[in-house]
Every structure is written in structure tokens, then in C-alpha cells.
Length: 520
Image 1: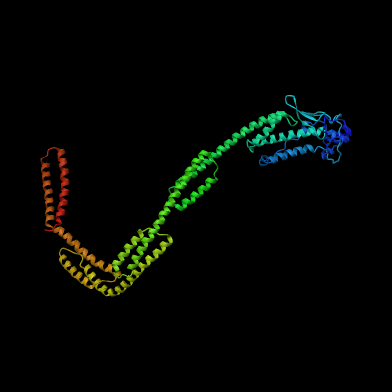
Image 2 (image 1 turned 90 degrees about the horizontal axis):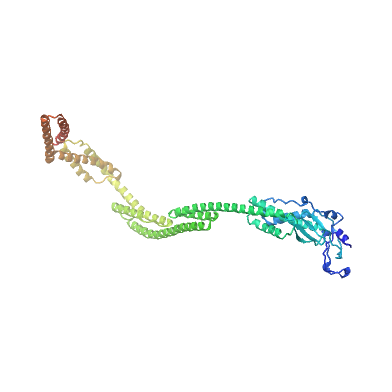
């Protein structure tokens, strides 16, 4: 094949400048290039593809559907693949099998081609034009047509620009971290320093500035968001600590224990604050929990010891109660049981199950005694019913002696004494009637005592003399005041004396009334 035929067939060419124009049979295998499916697809239509690509033919960057997709590196690779696929789609699909071709290096391997911002020379070297007008070699054409070679390096430009645009958009949309710009920035700067693609490199310079600025803004936003989150976390953790400290001295052991467990779970779920502040709060939180737990353990240890003591004390009380259960000294034993009950109440409580068992035994001993006493007293009440009628008659007779006067006092007193003697001889009455019947007698007895006490007070010579003396003192004072009033010439003095006289008259009347109560 001639060079022109090889170019038309789309055969990849590797030019060995040191090789001689030897027969094809003597060419080394390295000088042979196998055709690929894309190489075999070349037809006369490929000639049209060798024309320079217009700027608008470069595929536009592909948008990332969601921030989550944009953040993943595979998503960017997918978009790059889509861009490359868009370019490759322009090549007609035609599968052909072509035998390896030996090229005579003395003839041109490829033709030159030019696109905006780049070109390929006759030796397959691909160049890009820098913003300052200088050229930089970006690679060498190894396979395919010149147009395909340029498209390959243009696709690298599109891919890098696409990733840079997406990263910039995600930074501005707050969907990316500042560090996400690092890789793209590194590639952009490397490409500006040593280009590896064909395209408008001034766009990369602008993207570098934009990405640097957007990354800085995003870094400030992330910092502000982190600071706000830390402040909120610090506030929440402070509230947890304050609640824990308020429970540290609680004696509601079950409720406080459950709440402290809940607070620990809330602490674990809370966001992180600054390390130092969080550590300080954790020390306080831990101290509150440990303090409460220590007090709780001491409390329950003391309670266990107290319950052991209660077991011993109440077993001893039960033995005393059981020993008294057969007594027939009803009054004395009843008082002893009352004392035992008071000691039982003062003793500490045992464990719930043990306490109930102990109380059942203690109560059984009391019930045995009091049931026996009740039966005995009921039997005795039957015997006492015969005394009830006689005592009721005596009680009514005593009440009939009232009221008492100075004239009948001595007779009432003597009659009451006779009634009391008969009362003592009759014996007891049933318990249910005792208070009612004895109450009537006590009323008469109390009336006699009160009258006798009052009469003694009224007839007491010493008291009567004192009362009479007081009356005489006020009368003397009143006479003296009257004399002073008669002798006084000053109206003001007479007014004062008149006031004194009025007061003295009132006191004299009170003294005379008191003295009148005494009997001569």
C-alpha cells in the first residue's frame, strides 16, 4: 500500500526514523501496526472528519444529576466517558479486517491538520497553542487519522473541563467539600504548566482562579457550619450535664438511675463540640454519674444491713408476742401488746417478702390473745348484766339531787355518799354500758365538788378580810380625792382630779362586788 492508501484505510502508523527501506519481509514485528475496529471503520467519509473541528463541535460539559452522584469519582468518570463517546459517535461505524501494513518511512506517514488552539504535524506530533501564542507538544499521533488524534486530545480537554465545571458548580451549590477541588486543581495547574490536551488553556486559568475562590468560600461555609454545629452540640451537652448534676444528690434511686441512663444515651447521640470543651463536660458528667452511683451503692448496702437488723429485732418481738398470747391477765397483757406494737413500728423494715411473713406471725400472736380476751369479757358481761339495772337506778338518784344550794348542800353530800357506797358493792356492769352509767354518777359527783370548792372560797375568813380591806382602801382614796377637788382652785387641776375620781369609783365598785360574794 502507498502512504495515501494507508491514510485512506485509516491504518495506524508508527514511524521509525532509524529504519532502512528494506523489503517488507525483513521488517521487524514492532514496525507492524494492527488495525482496530475503529481503524477499519475509516471510509472516504473520514476525509471529511480530518477537517478542523469548529469550537461549537466540542461537546458541552455534562451536568451531574444530584449532589450525591456528583460527589462520587465514578460519576465524573462516567461523564468523561459520555463526552468521549459523544466524540467517537461522529466516526462512522464500519467493521473491517485489514492485514498489517508495512510503511515506508521515506514517505510521509500522516498529513497535517489544524483545529482551534491546536494542530498535528506531518510526523504525528500534536501541539496546543498557549494563551500567550506559544505552542507546547501534548503528545504524538500513534493510531488512527489525524482528525481522530486531535479529537482524542480535545476529549481530554473536555473531560478535564467537565470535571472542573462540575466541581465548581458543586462547590457553589454547597454539595462538595473544599478538599474535593484539590485533585481537579492539581490537574488544571499541571496542564497549564505542561499541557496534555488540546483546547483553550485560558479557560483552565480562569477555572483555577474560580475553583480557588470557591474552595475558599466553601471552606469558610464549612467552618461556619461546623462552628454552629459544635456550638449547638456544646449547648446540648451542657444541658445533659446540668440534668445529671441535678440528679447526683437524688434519693429517688430507681427514677434517677433510669434518667441517668437516658442522659448517657443522649450524650452518645449528641454531635461533637470542641475537644477541650467536650472533655471538660464529660468530666463533669462522669463525676455526677459516679457520685450518684456511689451514693446508691452505699444506700443499698446500708439498707441490706438494716434489713438484717430488722429481721433480728422483729423475730425477737414475735417471740415476746407469742409468749404473751396465752395470758389471761387481760388488762396488763393488752398494755404490753400496745408497747410491743410501738416497738414494731419503730423497728426498720425487712425485705418485702420477709416483712410480710414476720408481720403475719406477729399479728397471729396478738389475735390469739385478743380473741381469747374478747370471749372471756363477753362471758363476764353476761354475768354483769344483773348489776346494770341497780346501777342505773343509783345513777338516776344521784342526778336527781341536782341542783345544789347552800340550804341543801349538806343533805346532797350525805345522800351522794350513801349512793357511792351502794355503787361499790354492786360490782361491774357490761363494758358497753359502763361509760354511760358511770357518766351519770360522775356528773353528780363533779357538781358536789365544784359547789364545795366555791363555798369554801366564799366563806374563807382570810379571803373575806382581804376583799373587805381592798374596799376600804378604795373608799379612803375616794374621800381624799373629793377633799382635793374641793380645795383646788385651778380649773386644770380640778379636771385631772375628776378623772382620777371616776377611775377610783369604778375600782371601788368592782371591789365591793367581789367582797359581796363572801358569806359572813
